[in-house]
View 1 (cartoon, rainbow, N blue to C red):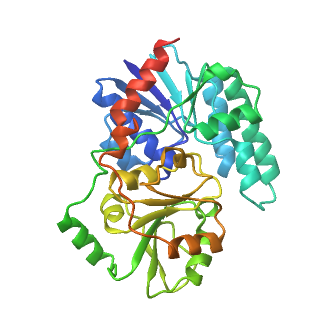
View 2 (view 1 turned 120 degrees about the horizontal axis):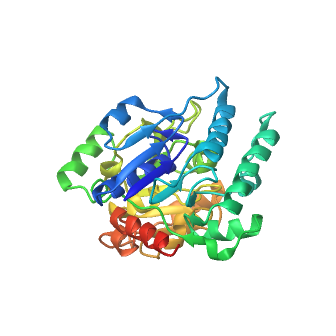
View 3 (view 1 turned 30 degrees about the vertical axis):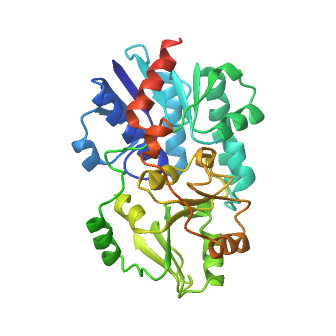
Length: 350
């Protein structure tokens, strides 16, 4: 089959970029030809890829305006006829499947932003989003919560919406060996006498970092430590919080810590939650994280809210009753192979 994927950037980065690379890997493994359309391309990553990459010529516009130009060009010039399946991970309306990792009105409600031009950008984002939901034949929501939010914010035919959780690369995420855990703990200077928590975050504004830092300011530094991977943290952080840098492969880190924690204000899915569980490490997360829908009591804790006091109290009351089952991904239909099969079955309905 011939597959086309549209996204703003072809690069390493956040959850949607990880998802894009999983799609590419899955379709290629299934013997398909993959083409990617993006306006920002990581040349090194492109050279390593076995797919076709198309980067349109855009006007020399600043910041978000370049993205809006890209969305407009896709909507007016992209031809889906040569492809068997076309997916977009951004707000275009020219494809077969719109992959929805979040609804913009909900972002506005839950995440405070003070930029002078924010209201204008919000209107433009919602213009493209509304057109996408109205035009695209199939909508793939990355959680049940997102499906509900689409219905609550836009007039969309409910039969168009399909909930399909994003997959995990099980070739990459699996429980580490004792030798690897020991080495990782040594490299990261993890004190085995403390309970160690990991926050993977490249976007601190919505991931709950502010609340986490306040919570760890309450907690005894001799008993608890927070490691943050991804973007840097403020210099004025508590002594029991450390930045460990951007780590391309977090799998051994998941296995080396006691818990992964993600107390987000708003998170469409939160891949780090099933990634951690696939590595055998329990999680603490908030109700606002889509992946919380998959959790049972043996997998971790879903916080009532993400207030610092709630986080600190929950951590103090932790016990060792969590027994994460083997192969969390396969059990919940989260392998790449299962995901690709589900997408193709969706298209067969058309």
